[in-house]
Length: 349
Image 1 (cartoon, helix red, strand yellow):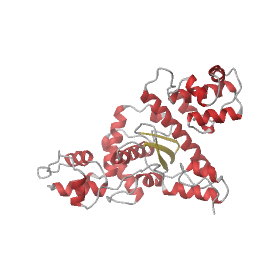
Image 2: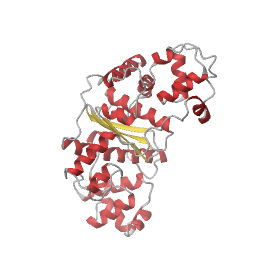
Image 3: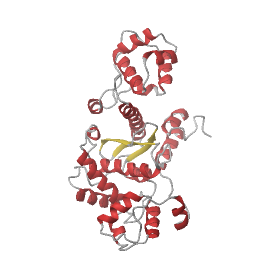
């Protein structure tokens, strides 16, 4: 990853992160014990910034030093619109999610360079999808790669990791963003505030972009037309709940559908849409009345297990970070940062 080369680039980066956080110069200057005029000169590149001042600025912005001195990949910089004083709140949230995505990629590069995680040779996809049918076929290929047949998938973050996409949640109010700069090796962030079922579907959506190959150019996911997103939606539905599984029900009762939704951990709307596409007779199912918690308790004894509970890290990621720490490739503090606090920042035993 490129680093800022001079104080002018550093100042511009500080300004972008400040605007992304929705802070004015006065507020940030007060938080990091600087005069507003001094911060203004830092952002314009007219004044040098000391290491201590930069640390205080990073703390006030709630980012890492790396977020300020390391830049996103070149084509990502070109694709992402800059934030300014007039940016809408949702644009600032996307910027914040982008910071988390870039941080995830830096962490992944560290583990890759240490030989602790490797790209996955998928042997499929990579050329985009041109139709919903092609998207569904790709989803079936993915299930074949995972060797799961038509069975329910486990935790989506672990499923993604088997495909070389390393997920985590973000506090930014977004659905999801992904980045696959290297075939078979990418990162994704999923909105932590999303409803659990939606987090699971969003992770599957980012898997679709990753496998289809429209993020092999790192800028790809930032300019994907709506039609392509709809094709990825078809991938998601087939990946999470194969149409063939629903089609076998023929004339299901409502309880049968509730059990299926619980087993496959999908939303009721996705289940019903898949059933309709499969030509299933839904007359007995009261299909347009969403189930509530008591329905799941009555039919299966529990609500569907929550997926991607923050920080939403794959188990293989945490194991790799533990190994990196134990082999002294990273400090305990760095291992804690890379696992979003899952690991302690103190010395390991």
